[in-house]
Image (cartoon, rainbow, N blue to C red; front, top):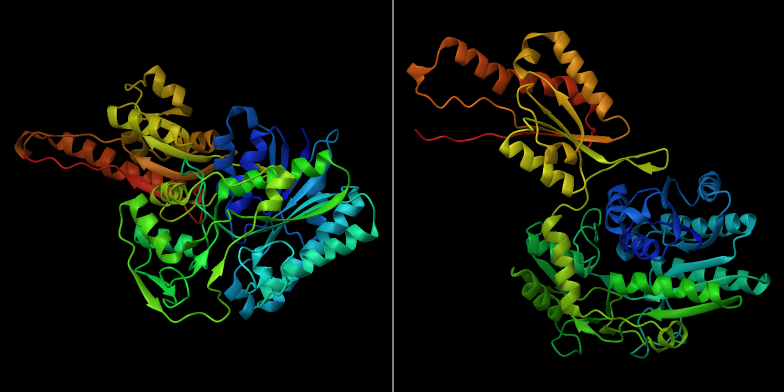
Length: 497
């Protein structure tokens, strides 16, 4: 298999494509500046890809507009397996934002692509799959839309995509040896069926599907449907929706074709060829989620079309690719993602090109609740550091789930600064090279007798373990927690007497 550079690989489509490509045996270098994505998506991609993918995904944090970052990305591939092809996702994609900030869109989408092509040229890499868009068709003159339809974008985003396509055509015509695929896809939606990776837009979503899912999960009050008087079957706009996993497989099919055939330039629609109205999507999502999706009909938006549906016949002919997943599956998988990730991805960090595992410290980890927490968080991909009293030895299965174990008497930590410092040092040693994000205070003494039965010593020891020790540990370790997402969780209990 080959070494590939994936620009924007942490994004919605990029992350799902990375998973498909890892499954096909490719080695990947992902270049991303995380301006509208999270490194956490790539950590989860590696989790889904399984042990066989270890060491086959390298992350380079950088910008395609920066030649030095591009040079680092190409250099990140193994010396004996240089980058042979690039899949180019990096770019800005919000239509409304492009109208407000056209210079930014031309800079990132066109200038960034130009820098990438120059770097590829310098590295002798001549194979590129470009993430284009059906937006460049503008308001279509015929539906379904073939690849031969006029290119007539009506916003800066569409113009920038059309410009990159023209740049690729000029490059292909001027220099032999280029293998290029320009993939014009329509409306990618859904998520991986595991619910571990999905679409996590920054701010208010610009597209229908994430807005619908956020309304269903309670993040948004209601959906605005732009126009209820279109000449369609229910008056709402009709679009061609494509499951993101179908789209990821389409990128792999395009790459396979380019690598197997002689140099050429392919221009292909990736879509289902079937249209669904906005109200049909709302109804399907309600069925999949079991949640109501309130909506209101508002005025049409300038530049919208009644119906936009792909003619995907050429992709089937040239790539042997077609969509396989239904609207019901798109909604089911989209809800699987949104319901367990209501706020999208948490923040993770990168060090030396490697994704740092999320790490949690659990006190009281040997007990019944503690060992259950250890097993649950470890199975969810966390690196767990367990801790408990010297007399509370963990069972072998709990130790097996832990990346490290620290024996400590919490009562002594609150009384003796040197004990606390030693505990802190042990935690920092155990979490070195990890993304230390959370402390779960589960250790506690439970004094269930009546007030009269408790001695002064009982009260002192209970306060030391249940109150003073968690405070001391939290204060000692707080600077080491990630600034943006560090969490401290205290496990309490209620006893009725």
